[in-house]
Length: 65
Image (tube, rainbow, N blue to C red; front, side, top):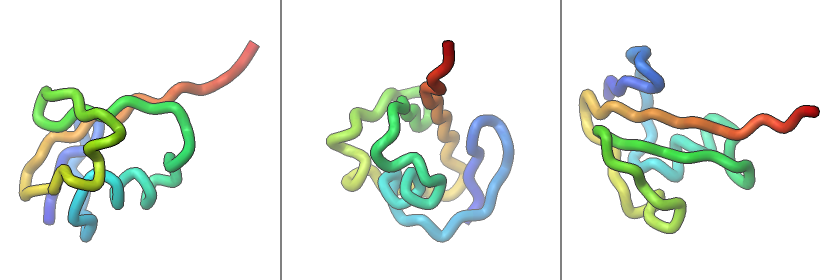
């Protein structure tokens, strides 16, 4: 299916947001997820399905000093 990830169209076979986070290797890191302009808590990622043309925004923290 086609989704928009951080503004760019992308093909994915992921069924839910947790699978997408794992595919992007963000599991265990600090990040925030928004689906269609609604913030999704980490506890609900597995139960939040992806659908055709969803707009997903993922912001992850990068350490530095």
